[in-house]
Image (cartoon, rainbow, N blue to C red; front, side):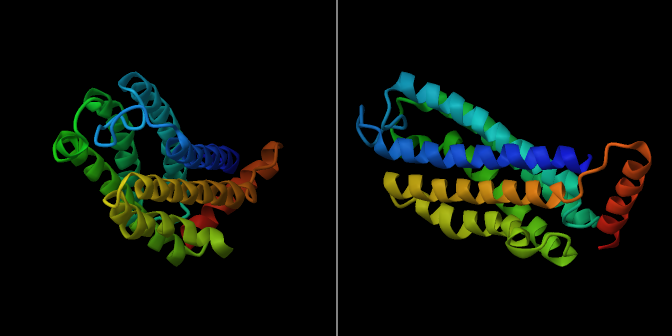
Length: 224
């Protein structure tokens, strides 16, 4: 993929992350319409299904970001790092699908649903994203292609899941929304990093310089 394309994918991820954080805030401020032990809380079952469709769409923006990261060679050309990047992509695909799966449990007791298929699906999907990003983050740090705080954003997404998000999900509704919002902000930072780092390698429009720039870009990525 060209640097221009990767930059745009990063921007999509940046926006998706911010929208995810804003969505967590909306859930915190929404007046409760059902008991707090129901999966759909704070919405009615109909409202919950609408929100879950929105989360599915918003997660597609995060998926685009992870695909861009996997194609960027920011972590170098090692096979293990590449496999980890695509593991994170697979995890995000599963997480997006689970947002739709959760719709069928709208009227269920939360603890019962979370102990069954819904909770298992969320757990597996998030773990795949987090584990993949931990390895990718190590690759980005070792490669050294990204600079400044940008280079820390991939590993921060992985660490954030296991250190902040996972414990927070078991600390009640408010804490869960806060840690999810925090994770979405980390994705926004990752998106901005991909956008900013690849924008600096944008290819010129003329055929000759563009070919040279592409060759230099790929040589640099592979060399590091």
